[in-house]
Length: 289
Image 1 (tube, rainbow, N blue to C red):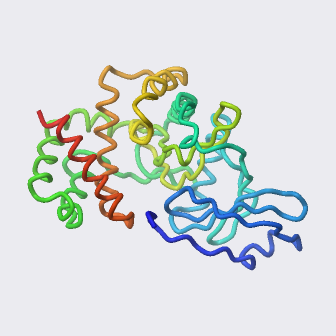
Image 2 (cartoon, one colour):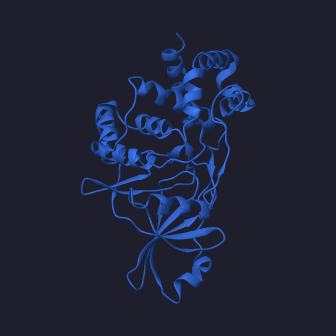
Image 3 (cartoon, rainbow, N blue to C red):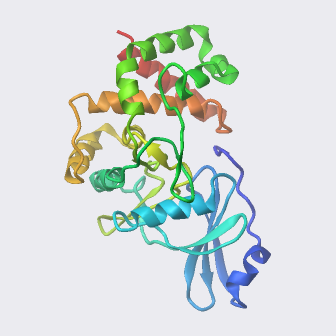
């Protein structure tokens, strides 16, 4: 399966205290998401909720950020929590992946998320402090991934050398993006966005959230959306209060290629990694000259 971590099996005993004697009428695995396991539960008293089993991320950190953005975009409410799990309210809606004509509304929500600004870039901790994390430049995440043995196996020395040259030439833009400290969802793609009655009804799966450049979320949304909807995405970003330079798409692509490098070192499937290599080659063809 194309996942970072295998699905964890449902275990009723894990949430026995939360159930307080209630029966579970149905359990449904929600297939979206690549790291953690999410189960929709319908309980005997009529409550509908989602049990989230963590393979990656931190429940306290995720809930802190959910509470931070609750007045800006619709997000689940945490109902209960254990050492390795949380129970959240269930949000109605279809995945944006199924109704891409509402990509503009998703982009407007992205802009609302990016309106939250921190004092510095990095990982957001559960207490609101920031742990520094270097994204770009010659000594940060990009350089680390280009030196990774698995990346070099997938790309080969020639492609890696070409990427190094591209990133050196784009150092100015990368440094500018690296200095930004907006709230970033980190996995803003159509499988994490719910649409109900034409509006965004939920932004899910915040385990990769951090303070950084919103162009990461923009690049993710553009990559996973047909080009027919890219104009609507730009209009949605502007409707949400975001302004950007003429090279906004190039900036998004520049940031998004770093995600492709990270994917090559993950547990995602080989077929998905071949797609990443193809995206990197396409990126190089646009940026190398």
